[in-house]
Length: 331
Image 1 (cartoon, helix red, strand yellow):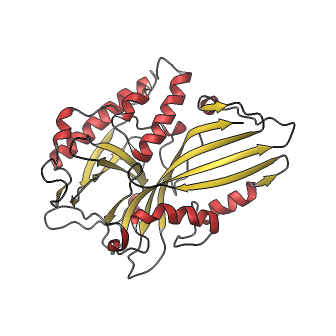
Image 2 (cartoon, one colour):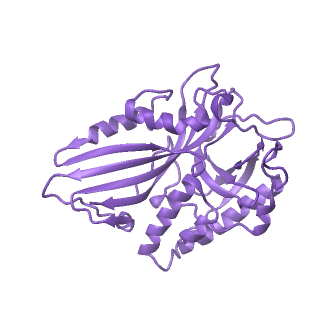
């Protein structure tokens, strides 16, 4: 699959199915059940966060070896779940007996960023080392939608040590979540980032720094839009809560590290007499319809960005982006 490029090395993801996992134990669903709607309380206790991550690692390996998207859907949600479940579905069609050669994922040196919050969804971030990357750290965002739900991972970002922001940690050891809207005090609020990014890709305007996922991405699209025998069209879709809720943590410079989702459609139409050359068996496994003249690819993209404080000004900077093919339609 064609995964979105990170600014530096990140784990290879064949159709992005790298972190599929199974259900958490029912005991873990008991966290934060008292006054979760109104009281400002820790999203989760550190011991429970450790249990969530441990179970995630263990069952991730089980699900990846068996290539089971059903198990994944009980533990992953949002962008990460959409990407991984599509990847597992595709690979399962090609390997019904699973992947006995799968190399187990190992997460270590875990640190937890746990905010105090009121209302739902609640979230926390696990900051870990992984045997999938030589350097850099994995940031896994876990969210819980209500008191009756289990914790599920909704974002993964791989960030180099040199680029890891310094987070605001209170005297009680808790991180600080960022509000949406004007209360965020950011140049772009978390709940407006997806729409702002989609608009940037279309118009080239907005509070985004130049780079691989912004200016260079627009240049690549312009270069591939019209080629002999083929026309390529792009349509980007903003996403948000409840399916793709963004999450942000305040950083020491007054800004924030924000995780958000976007969706991207690419339609390739070939000249009359030419049939779209879809050769990748993993892509074919997701195909609906018959590609007679055109193929539309739909990708879900998860981003981790640094957003400056509104009072300081500046531009949104991408630290990591991972995307995965979630559907293909031939016409």
